[in-house]
Structure formats: structure tokens, C-alpha cells
Image (cartoon, rainbow, N blue to C red; front, side, top):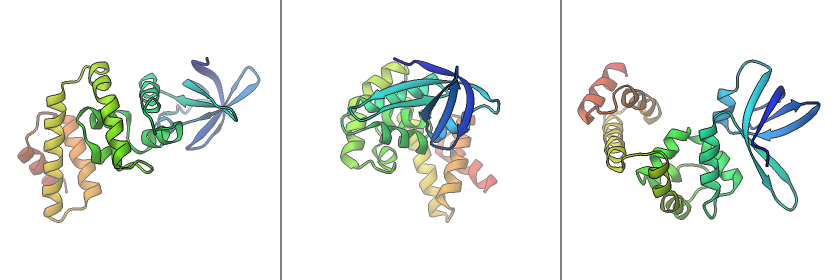
Length: 193
């Protein structure tokens, strides 16, 4: 019903914003990903999804159209409500969610607060084909790069490096060179750690 809102940003917090559109203030629930992308200017445009329940009409807002589409895919899964979908988009960026679903990475999906093993498996089972088709991904390449990442990460952990900092570094290396082998990822990471 409401596809987007455009107007003056009146209030802003990590979980919601208020946009003044022609004298009417709309309370819009957002993810941390959208919060990080909000422009510095007062005048903004967000793509929206209106959820209507018996007791509430809730608007969810997204700076990127692609994030809204992922949100809609997530809430189509039984057991995933709007709150959990927003938590997913706050915990991981949309590309990480797409890659986790496409590669069948249950542990990444399950690492999100509020999602158990069965729900994580259901998300992957319900959305894997849609995500592969929608984002035109090659299932094999996603799995390979994910395996290289995991192997490099576990090798660095064995060497005594902290997982969090290693993860960020490895993701940066893979982003710069998606075809990097496990050995080259580890060597590059060791130079930077």
C-alpha cells in the first residue's frame, strides 16, 4: 500500500525514524543496516513495507530496495516474523544473508539472535532456490568461496588469532579477490594481523 516515504527526517534512532511527509509524521522501523546508510541530509527517501495486524499498522523502512526485497522474502518463511527479519538485517548485511542462504550455511543463519537450528534450516530450505534464481547466483562458486573463508578462519584461530578481527580481515581479502585460494587468504591475513 505504501511503497516509499519521502520527506524530512525528524527523529532518528538505530531502530526507528520519524519522517515528516506533508505535515504527517510517519514512524518507520528500520534495521541497523539501513541506519548506517541514512544520509546526513534532513531530506530522505526510504522504501517501505506496511505490515497490517489486528492491533497495529507497522511501517518498515529501507534505504535500499534490495534490502526490502530480502525482508519480504524472509517474512514469507513460516516462523520468521517482521521482528526477526529486522534482527537478521541488523546482524548481517543483505549480501551476507543472501550468500548464507544460497550456500546453505545453517550456522551463519543460526548465529542470529532468535533463530534456532530448525528455523535456520527452514529459511534455507524455503528460500535457497528463490535466492539463487533472483540474484542469478552460481551455487557452486558461493559454496567454494565460503569454504575457503571458513578454512582460512579456522586456520587463523588455531594459530591463536581472535576470531572477530580475523573474520573482518578475511572478508576484506575475499571482497578484494573473490578467487583467492585458502593459502593466499591466510598469507595476506598474517601480513595484516
